[in-house]
Image (tube, rainbow, N blue to C red):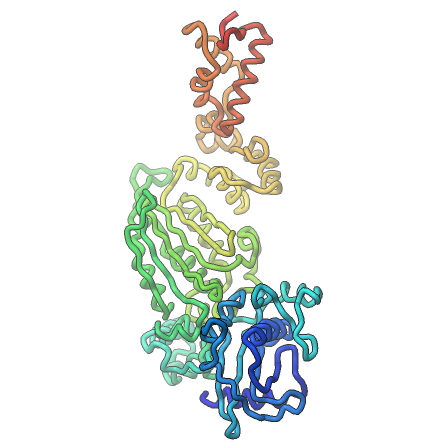
Length: 548
């Protein structure tokens, strides 16, 4: 749309007054002034529910007459003879990708700064955020109500934004052809109609473009890799990495849009070796792939659909030779906890990129009913493999899949224990992995006699150990009674006549419960020795312990 910004400029001039998101200037005064205005207009646009704020040069404030300007941003230098645009970008936080348009209106030179609205956090210039109050630019900290609203405000859907200069030629024809095929397979009743649609009609119907305009989602899913500059400063990259058991990188490959095609390319890169194990009730081994294909595609699609592209990070797929596969994407996990996803019976009510997610659903890249994560858990559980491990921290989502049975007997027999809900299975899986569980989870498992122990030191209960044929492991976790340890100490002293405290540490450490920390084991042995001293079985003399 070549005249888009000219039409935009004229519509802005028609505004009755300056706004929180709109300011008119005649000429340039200083680089600092422009930086403060960009901060104020980005924050003002966010508060006003606008996608962009605008700083306009060449218009007389008050009358809004187009008078032209001598200001040329491409020529103008900032302090240190640095290019003005680069100088401004490097002093804004977080960095925002404003665009500068030099136009001719009625033979007069004008300049239009198009400034993206702040998202989630206020935009600062030289570490100070600004806001527009009426026609004045003020420090945001002087207006706590506006500051609070900015922190609470979530931006409109970035994935639905229009790339105004992008055209159909910026999309990959092969990717469009594959998208047509997938869409037709999913919508068989429209198969004949789809054949008659031109590309723009198809893309509109598939909710990938909006009225023929290319969206950020269209570039991500179907765009030529060189078309990703339309997304800048947002990034769209996937990196696959292979690591050895020692953690050293052995191979890697980068993937760019179109992600519709990259999905299969990444999938084929993952080695996914065959794994043999003995299923319940048979002596014949079963051979399966380490990672169910559904898990790989769903985890990767989730990363693509829920990535916060504006953070500039990569989606990573790390394959380790210790039979683990890790997917990571940038951005907060919107449901907050994985339990919120697993235990609800309906799809999520909100997504970071709703337009992109809907486009991926229409192309069969994501589960249409929002149950993909729950299905991944069920697949791992039915295979007797450890459940997925989610790590939600540092503004990222990281999920690890283990492609083997860690404890085959426990896994097979646990499935035979009755009255286990998905929630119980997840919590027990955490206990087995020595991960923390909540007090509510602990209370539920304890009421069902599934765990024993104290907070931060829970272990599988004796009844579950009996059902799962893990009596030995249970004793190793829980430990033996004090009579056993007293007898062992007495036998040691009968054999060697005396012993230092360090001798007992070495002698008993591997006999004490695995659930105890090293510090707890130290105090356990100390208490045992003092108890035996009070019972007049042993005594302490000359830094050694002896039999009475």
